[in-house]
Length: 88
Image (cartoon, one colour):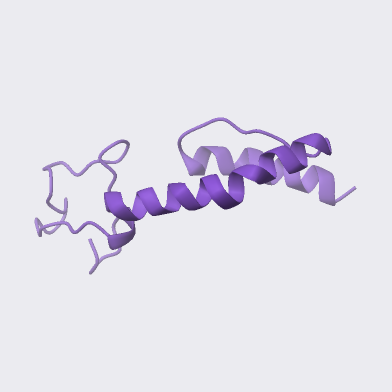
């Protein structure tokens, strides 16, 4: 909901009524960067640019893998891992 900054996700934080803001009842908008064609472009860029780094850092023994689907749950693990390696 652009006016308020409220963000919804149909997979883990859906609005009470599909397509409508919970507080105002106004129609929700899909951000351009969340549309399928943009997501495909981002995934292609990942395959071409980011994925090769997995092999690069893996062969050097400095790759760590984190599992999850919600960034607010994964972030504390990543932060702790980074702090342990950069504060020593």
